[in-house]
Length: 449
Image 1 (cartoon, one colour):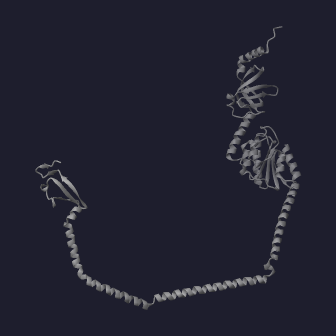
Image 2: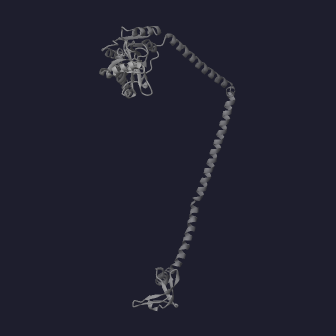
């Protein structure tokens, strides 16, 4: 018997063997995700399993950033990973570098992409969805004649609303031909124009089995339907594009039949409730009118109508008198103003005023005749005065010239100047200056200070 080895040494040996195998350095593994956890660090830990085995797996944050989808439990994926052993626990693990969805996962990616596209186009908006009729007379059903969905819908309708008629369009709900059949059945129901609401659905199944209700033909037929559509595809956890575009989504076919109709008992209760509301409203209005009539009956006007009429007649008479007095007063005032204006416009008065003004005009004309001989001397005096002013020394000074005076006489040329003070006269005053230097054109004489 060989010497026993520590656990750590065995683990390291196995790890070296695994790390040294080139096949295990990059291997593609297919399996189902379970126990998936993404931590705040970005690292993802999960288990990859199939029908008989399972392996722990880790995808570090740097590799997890390359994911184009959100991994969830139950999702089938294909991973590219390195197989090695984690020494602390001795577990063989997959260190995942790449991950993509497998099979169903690819359908799921197509589903999500188409969903985002239709949502952006507004096909799922609540504003375009129509309410279901409260009391439908005929309900259309589009489903398989072999599935349990038809039985569940028909049973529920017979129980809740046996008076409602049913129009059934049998179609395949799975396989390559199912989508065109479902779309054509929806359009055929619209062409009939006698259905009040339409139930489209089938029982539960995998995403592949429900895929017909994600096809464009079915989604467009529901979107274009003039009849309100209830989508009843699969079970409560199953969702298809038909559910999002339909006017109402039911969790199951049975729930769709319940949404489409109200039970006779429920309708009877609604009628009773509305009857009670109507009775309360009418009773309240009758009581209010009765109280108003009683108040009017107790009023003094109705008890003594003759007195009321006399009162109104007296008020009318008083108003008539006030109106007459007002009119008479206005007529008198207008007559007085007319007489006054006539007096002012009397022709005799106008003649008197004209003669007075004519006499005054004659007086002014006589005065003007007396003043005419004075016009020529006055004009002559004005001309002489103007000539005298033009030769006046003051006029010269006003033009900017000055007068120089020395020893009491005005200086006419520079040779008359001698040493001493001179007076320079301006238009508005005079100044005293001292002669220091003279220039007579021949020589310059300077006076020392």
